[in-house]
Image 1: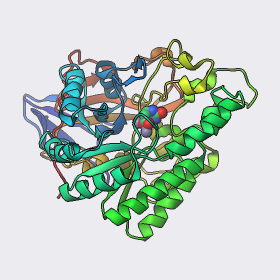
Image 2: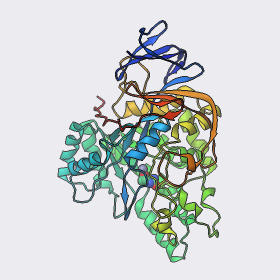
Image 3: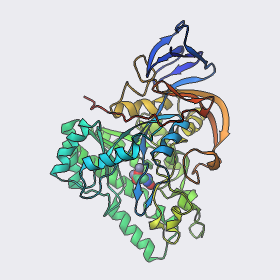
Image 4: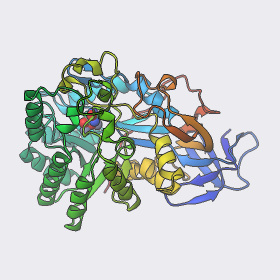
Length: 461
Ligand code: URP
Ligand code: ZN
Ligand code: ZN
C-alpha cells in the first residue's frame, strides 16, 4: 500500500506541472497520470502545490551560550520546523576549547538523536585549530559531515584568526569539503562595544551601533581574499548588507567560488526595531542578533541578490532565547543579551508570502532557495531537495490560499515571542510527509513521535 497525492501541481526548482505523486515506504516511487494501486491511500490535493520539504541550512538548537541555553532544543525546534514545512535542518555543534571534534559530535548526537521530529545534519563548528583538528576534518567526513563552520566574530570565544582560516581552507579544499563563515570583524566590534560602554550607552540600540555594515563588509572582503589565495570555495552565512553583497560580487568577478545564504529577518525587518537612540525600552532585545538588522536599502539589495541567483539559500539562523528571563539577562547591559532569535517555524511561510505572493520571486525560485540549492550545496541532492522518483518522500502540500497572522502565543517553537509578530502570512502546510510518513494532515501536526533521522551527507565530487 502506498500514498497517492492526487490533483496537485508539482513545483520543483525548475518545473511546474500537474501530476499525481505516489509514495511508498520512504520514497517517491512514481509521478504521472493514471498511476496508483487499488489499495493506495488517496489524498486529494487539488488547488495545492506539491513542493519539496524545506531544508533550513542554519539552526542552533540546544545551544549553551554563556550561562544560558537556547529556549528550543532539538525536540521543540524540529517540531516547529515540521509545522512550518521544513523537513531537514542543519544545526551547528560547536567545538569547545580543548575538545576534539569527535567529542563535539558525540555530544551533538546525544542532544539530537531520538528526540528530533525532522531529519537533521550538522555543520561542525571549529574554534580550536590544531594539527589534530585538521586530521579530524577527514574523520568528520566519514561521519557524514561535509561542511564546517568558522566565526570571524565573538572574540575570545569562537573567533578564529586569518592564519587559521587559511589553513582550514587549504585543508577543506583537499577534502572537497566546504567551510561556512560568520563574517563580522570581531576585533573591531569589541572596540566599538568598549566605546559604547565608556559613553554609558547600554541599551539594545547600541548592539546595532557596535556592529555596523562595515564590519561585515570588511570580514567578507578579507575572507574572500583568503579564499582566493587558498583557492577554496566558501559559504557565507546570514548575509545582512548590500555592502557585503557588493564585496561578494567583486570577488566572484575575480573567480572566487562563494555560496551565499541570507535569512528572512534580513529581508523583512529593519533597524527601526531597535527603537530610538534615547529610548528606555528593552523591546529591541528581541532583535539582538548578529549581524544586526539593517536598512530598507539592504533588504532591497538582498531580494535582488536572490532574484539574480547570487544568494542561493535561506537559513533561519534559529537561535531562540525567551524575552523574559533570557534576553533580560542583558537588561542593564546590551553586551550580556544572548544573541539570536527564533525563525525556523516561519521561514517557508515568510518567503512564500513576501517573496512569491508579493511578486519578488517565482515559486520555482522559492523552492530553489528554501530547499533544492541547500541539498545541492550540502551533499544531499537528489535524495532530498526535489520531487523526483527515487528521492526521499519529503513533501509539503502547500495550500496557497489560506491567510493567517504570526502570533507567538500560537506557535510551536518553545519561545515567548516571535520577531515577526503580527505579520500577515499567505499559504500554509496542508499535508506534509517526512520520508513517506504523514506528519501533517489537514494543517495539524499528527506525528507524535520524534521520527527524524540523522542525515549522513556525502562530499560533492
Ligand atoms: O545572533 C545570532 N545570529 N546568533 C546565533 C549565532 C550566530 O552567530 O549565528
Ligand atoms: Zn553567525
Ligand atoms: Zn547562526
